[in-house]
Length: 213
Ligand code: AP5
Image 1 (tube, rainbow, N blue to C red):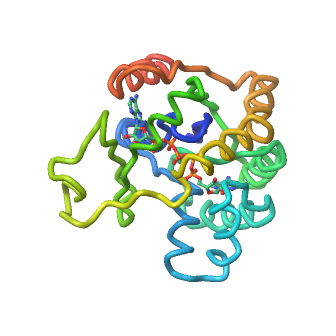
Image 2: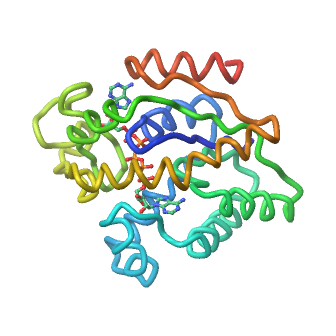
């Protein structure tokens, strides 16, 4: 199964992907997490991506699609939850082309929706455990001990792109370049929309209902 999570920065794609991974016995493929790991390693991919990410701009499509091809080869027959990809119509077309070569296809694109102000509130208070990608929120979902991951006890970080001016640019980029991706899947009868406002559990229940779980 190939399920795509669409929606603006901070809508809760990473948070909800974890429930879907468990429910569908799938693998989460977050292009943002892969890029951040590459930045930490100082690889060529990371060096290319960093300047775009710090500014809240999109990394070029050919870089992302090369990365996806490699990951799909590694993942074989596993079901995949795509988190933060595709982000442009060109990426959606590229993914369809790559899956077509494998005799496969996207099953569902699930779009989470919230107002921009909710995004700004959530991201300003987000903290992340870089090693695992576990996500916390100082207001809505705080860690048990301030500043450290519940599982490993390692420090949490405030992402460089979660500063107010970068968040605003990420939202502008989303509305201009990524919103059309929902239309792409709607035209193919694959789009399901879910209200992303409400508690984490409420949103999870809506998603499961929308995909018949
Ligand atoms: P990426 O890492 O993909 O960031 P994003 O799409 O902006 O999404 P986020 O990770 O910020 O948010 P999320 O929706 O996962 O929300 P979360 O669950 O964390 O991309 C970063 C950058 O990498 C991009 O700007 C770009 O440069 C580059 N990039 C990545 N993919 C690319 C691609 N395909 N093409 C080109 N460039 C690419 O939740 C947010 C917060 O809210 C957390 O604190 C969480 O605890 C809290 N929260 C979640 N749900 C709720 C709820 N229901 N109620 C209250 N709080 C909640």
